[in-house]
Image (cartoon, rainbow, N blue to C red; front, side, top):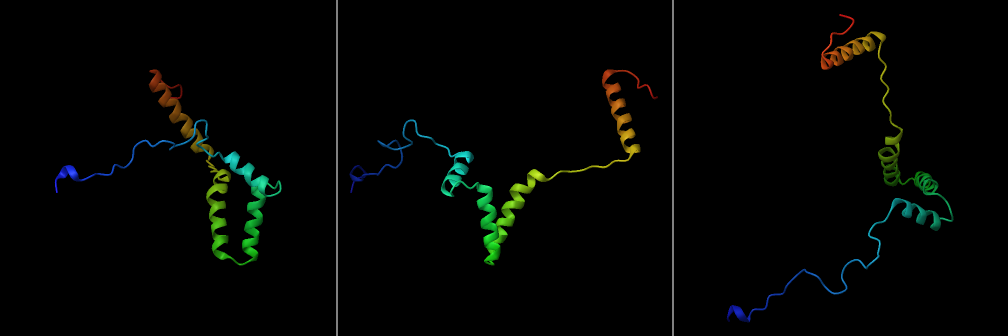
Length: 115
């Protein structure tokens, strides 16, 4: 058998009719998804549906599903509520002010007043 007699199938490449149609949307937005959930749940907002499903999972004793809801809520919702509070003493604030003034004075090439 000669190599010329072997037919090699080609993979890939452009094919007629393949791909996204002209003018077709290639993304799904969060707003579209939320609107769809609201429309299919008799006008109820996604947050309300999510909360009800979470409560139902708890009442049914589905601990795996409850854990998933907790993870969802803690990972997504709590990030927007998290904040860091820093309480400093007056001495620490004054020390930072002095260090900042000194650094600015050095950059500007002048001597700070308080020296």
